[in-house]
Length: 152
Image (cartoon, rainbow, N blue to C red):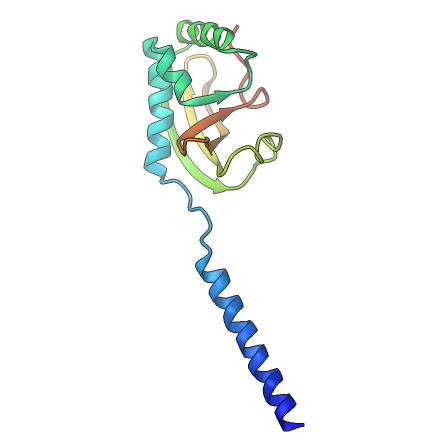
């Protein structure tokens, strides 16, 4: 009987130790650095404002448009219509805001970025946009129709 209790204790200890090491050594993806995300958004908006549409398109996955040509035209219109005064990252949170659930399975990592934006058209406002890691491991801004209406 003592031997059976000893075996159960050893097995329990082994399972507990194995669980501890498994859960503490399997790393979860870490949040992207706020400075890195700030740079992505600043570069994106600067590219649009300067008319460098190709560079802006490389930084996003924009689901508002059916193809690259319609996206290019929309970005060209946006560059003419609006002036962005500032954009600041206010926070980055893990997971899916629910807005991009259709896309969340497609990407390795996804985070929601809370932004404070000031532009000519809307004044100061806050918006949350997801950033995702694409197949090449690069961070991209994911823009959905529910986030921002496309420029026409």
